[in-house]
Image 1 (cartoon, one colour):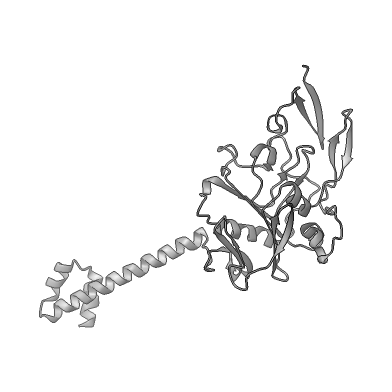
Image 2 (cartoon, rainbow, N blue to C red; image 1 turned 180 degrees about the vertical axis):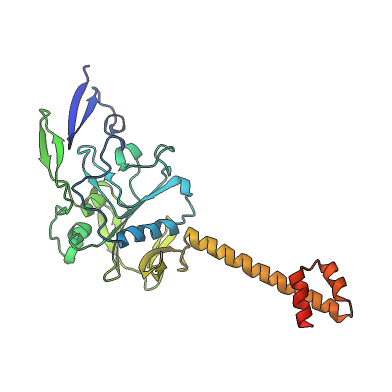
Length: 317
């Protein structure tokens, strides 16, 4: 059979896709992350600093008992290509988690984007942060508790993509909104929407074919994800010098999971406490020996006291 050559136009780039008869799998013939754009000039950058800091806190406090850092992947504001029939269609979740996937692409390279037909695994968790103008797309039919647009109106400035018609002529089609993509195409099990302005967290769980909004617990963890064995709550505290209400992972008892920096600081404090305890015990032992009438020089030799410790004993004496 003669291979069928198709052209997919992406701005000024032409991607050639060859197809055999019988057809090969999408992973073999569709573009990889090296072929697809990692960003679009028409798309704005992060709307505010919160959209930079909050994902960092989620990634740095994530600790899954069933997965190591090497077999899960987290990302924020990364192009996620999801539709094999429309290879240019993508979403950019504010934060997402994929499990059972190598930390590096093909265990060797940092990802430029996340391409479903190459990776195989869809996200397990997606978190969106509400911004002015994004509520309708982020909440879908739950926006204002009414189905305002069942097709999911997209606020993505890249509102169309190239589709190949039967006669190989490009036509235009409009991609669905985020909520619909997460629910019906990626089928993300856990979807969260958080507003830092109202400090309201909304939790949608995939039940059957649709998302059902779930009630939150009155205390942390506001949400407990049983299969991941991790909880999510709203933490009032300072992160990177900014005090705010942050989304943060926690254990089943509501104890906040620590960032790498906090773990290092905690280890230093514990080491300092242990050192001070040993110091106290040594000085107490020295005082006990001195109380028997033993000379300080002899006590210092027996206990291998430092000069500062010996000076402390002289002061006490």
